[in-house]
Image (cartoon, rainbow, N blue to C red; front, side, top):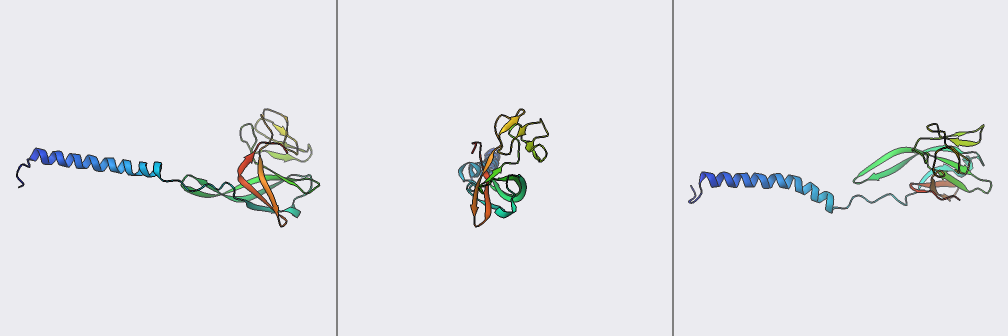
Length: 163
């Protein structure tokens, strides 16, 4: 046996070593989380969602598409939708699919020519402006670009400004 090493000092060494190992098990993931950068955001990523000629003038059309969302270190493919409205000059507005009151999904009422939120009866005109209801602001808009007759939107950037 090593001289000067008693049973008490050996157990003390083992307990300290075990405590250090347990601290490392907690500290290493925490340090990784705090010091390493998560995946880059998809801000600025445009997604092709429709053909410009397929969208009727003046009548909103709901379009379903798949987007990539990055949440910290996790990348998720998810289906989502947007409402497209094309005016007479060919400009397209894309509205986020949720009401600005509490985030319920709204729909287009063709007879009334308005967007209606079934949760609390907010009503929006074809331009997304609030006509009535508890909604505090117009419908959020997505960034839209038209390239080679295709409609591209950025589903990760919303704008609350009116056109």
